[in-house]
Amino acid sequence: MALIVQKFGGTSVGSIERIRAVAQRVKQTVKAGHSVVVVVSAMGKMTDQLVKLASEITADPDQRELDMLLATGEQAAIALLSMALQNLGQSAVSLTGAQIGIITETKHNRAHILHIHTQRLQHHLNEGSVVVVAGFQGMTESDNWEITTLGRGGSDTTAVALAATLKANLCEIYTDVSGIFNTDPRLVETAQLITEITCDEMLELASMGAQVLHPRSVEIARNYGIPLVVRSSWTDDPGTRIIPPIPQCCPREMLELSSLIDSVKFDTDCAKVAVLQVPDRPGVAATLFHQIAEQALSTGLILQSIHEDDTNDIAFTVNHRALSQAHATAMATVPLLSAQWGDCTPSPEVLVYRDLATVTIMGAGMLGYPGVAAQMFTALADAEINLHLISTSGVSVSCVIQGVDCDRAITTLCETFHVASSPLKPAAEPCQHPSFSASSIRGVALDLNQACLTLRQIPDRPGKAARVFQLLAEQSISVDMIVQSQRRQITNGRITRDIAFTLPEGDVDVACRVLRQAATELENAQIEVDRAIAKVSIVGSHLSQQQSSAFKMFTAIATHRINIQMIATSALKVSCVVSSDQGVEALRAVHTAFGLAGHHKIKVPA
Ligand code: ADP
Ligand code: ASP
Ligand code: MG
Image (cartoon, rainbow, N blue to C red; front, side, top):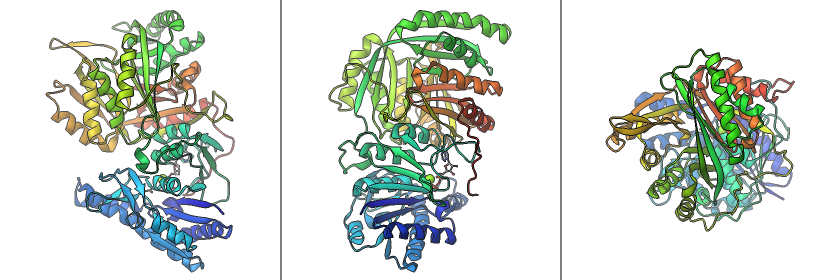
């Protein structure tokens, strides 16, 4: 007899007929001899409707009251499912997050789970009842037992957190598609099902916009070694297995906070090539990285900053062995750019920086904890270490710094994150399941809910960028694709740079407010916002070692004459920002270019 946690999303319980079907499935699982805890979302689009009702009362609802309102959606669904089970002769009891004791932080709308009381749950399970739990909600312990919610899509996180706490044998996420596909099957009908994927890859796909799993649920599965399956609630198809790495011994207390940073890594063989003032036109990045790929040169990070005066800066890292060839290739590309885009004025310029180092903090638990990245930047700034490039992923934050600062950076970071030591040799690879090939692109994701915020003319001194991310972290705003312009400018006698990053569109107003409030500190840097963006990302292990992946992606986008506004990479992904109306077209182009399209067209429930 196994203990199984089964979670059913909104569409899966979207009607009385669906609730009856779910009850049948749960009953069958019990009949097969298992104990079952069921987690349900609100029916259909109920949460959206509740949000809309609130917005009709006020544009800026009180967060506590919003949680009170949103938690009712799940409460209705659990009662109905419990009744449906009882109607089938299956003993069942519905419980809200507060009734169970799902204890969260005191943070409304995006609380993390700290721990889960199991007594009441266990009691009902021992009696042979199915326990039907309201997803997405919890309760504070220290602050008057307030009701909290975990953030949109958070029922997945409730399910995996329960599985971790109860040491369940399996956690099944039932949804409206038959598993994890190599891209969103609702947007690309040639998407193909993935039968197995590592937690790290899934974490990246989910945090880059594949909403099929709440990214934090994957963090918990990874940290606690929970076997996770995503499958359809319409069929008996096996779905997708998400493979956790070797389970670690994480304490069940401080559940979502137990394993933020587990290692600090470094690489001292790092140099940077920056190509400044390239034309802001479709095909520029493709042309440059075509040349690089032709030379079989491996690039590390690639970043392209926001355009200014119709030109962009592109920077990439290579190891020292490849540097002179990479430099020569970049120089040789400049005339090609001029030939293709007329006489570029001013002409692109190539700069080379040697003796750099990459320092990386790694661990799952950073999503939704923007404070971690901000803490890293602040710690490095306090040690007077300047950042050349920043790269973020679901499981890591890397900074490129001067090589001479590397030892100091490691000491500072180990102290800051209470990591005892770091390995001698960098091991930037994500955890990997042995059955996967080292070079595969696992999937392509699209995020249409992001905006780009640019701070123009921010003083180029250690600590200024860190302060920006600290201010945002204090508001729990997560940022991604942080790109500093390579160019420095002289503004009112000071050296300044531009810095741009992407953030959830819903957080833009708060971000602008706190940054404006800090105008004096940020020496009146100008704030620009572009809400009409889409982020397209390819995800796979060892991406940074495959010189052709980035080039292939840029080419696919350029072939559709879509302009790439920003580029940022990590070991696990390459992301490009394009304009929002071209997002789906770019996604389809990239999906096809990587040979990910299947012959069978997917049909998904309406
Ligand atoms: P639920 O209500 O069951 O939680 P969601 O709407 O949150 O369902 O997630 C399922 C949806 O995720 C699918 O309908 C699909 O459109 C979308 N999706 C995005 N990317 C992927 C992907 N890579 N694989 C599967 N589904 C995806
Ligand atoms: N009902 C919540 C939402 O729509 C939580 C969930 O479905 O996971 O975001
Ligand atoms: Mg969901």
